[in-house]
Length: 331
Image (tube, rainbow, N blue to C red):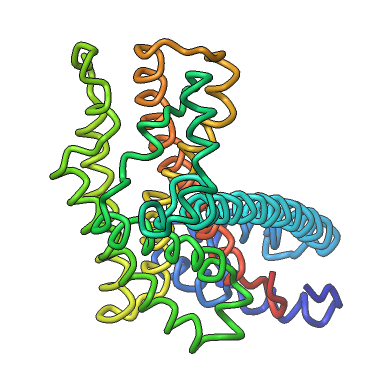
């Protein structure tokens, strides 16, 4: 903001000759504020103090400076929060990639005998210690090549592309790569959804691996089905926003929701390896194993949905503030 006196008087001369209360209540005043780049009437009152059409330049300078520092602090706070959220999502994506390609429940189980021999000690340890992550759950897709090729393998590729698609610098400097990876990304979403449908049809949900226990009072399978449908809907909505509506903001919003609905599986596994290990010390009874896994699944869904909406709110606030102009200077 330029505080030199000629600019201040030029700004003052462009003001409508009306009172402050009348200024805030007319449609013409709202249009004037938008043309001047001020988002609301509070910014107008921060810009000037009208007393018999006399502009108090000292108050103007102090209040503009104060508002400028406050907005700068808020923007730094938002950027820091978005940066930490990006780091968290990148870690969950990397964890998902390693889980599905290296160990333990990878797409190579039963397809590669060498790989199966390498990960067998992990399953033996889980079976021996009666861990919250049972060997049955870890190997539930064994001898299921259709599920491995339509759910696990595309899921690993989907997770690998998440950090690149979310990185703002990568999107700006490599637009063609971002677009091509987007086609692959949504193709993986379709394949993963098909694999999830096969899992549900074959009754491979974790609840079906405890036949000796009475049924859940509040089963988690309907929640998983709802999240899977939300995963499909958000992918389609993001695709429609960018291809037909050409609305980048809506595309980004729905992509964030789509990623949250998919990355919750990685968060579930992280909770199972950390929080559950503290709350349920091995050996864990089978009732506690099933209950803990069900509760972790519900909590991971809720956390991902809430965090995604919070991130969308931060991004919208960042874009809205970046487009606000005070005088001749961009905030």
